[in-house]
Amino acid sequence: MKAILYIGHGTRSKKGAEEAKQFLQAVMEHVKAPIQEISFLELTTPFIEEGFRRCVERGATEIKIVPVFLLTAGHIKQDIPNELAPLLSRYPDISVTTADALGVQEVILDAIAELVKRHVKDSISLSDSILLVGRGSSDPQTRIAFEQITAGIKTRLGIADIDVCYLAAIEPTFDQGLEKITAKAKGRIIVVPYLLFGGLLLSEVHQKVKRNQKLGHKISCTDSLAKHKVIQQIVIDRANTQGEPYAAVNH
Image (cartoon, rainbow, N blue to C red; front, top):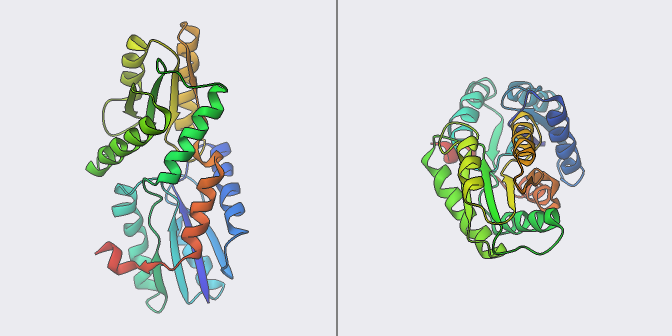
């Protein structure tokens, strides 16, 4: 019997964790699999081991891993495989396949542009600036991905001034990004958190944006990416299509 095991990142924020669970529960309503379980890499229960075990206990003979992560970085390449390795040994008769992270897709870039337009409520001006805020990772592919994202947003919105910063692991930091863009911006500053769900990181972004608003800067912040319906559809499609053999992906 086929099972789907969704793996999210996890957060210390109860509100953020609930948002992620509600998102995945909505996804599950559109996925054709008799067994579906939600799990998280860290900070939020149930963790991967429990989610995998629940699938087995419910009669799964094959489990498809669906990681709900924006980019392929350290969590996808190392942390999730490290969590799954002992489970594959414990349950050698279970066939395991996996889907990819969401990645940099045209439809996601379209969604970001739509979120920005919806947020400003009027036309985008050439004098406006965007600060794209990533979670951050030491994986070199992260910077490459954000170069692609930046180029895609420039094309869609016609804004030349787009800076990138990160909340962890690499520079420029969010504080550095804010300082740079507020010093040079000629029009509105639109902060775009490249984050799927709410949580402590998104709260930090909103708090610092409000602090800059009080300093007189014309700055505002869009919502998390999962607020756009296209993100849910991508995860649904990932779950409904055939996965790749797990060992072939990770070795």
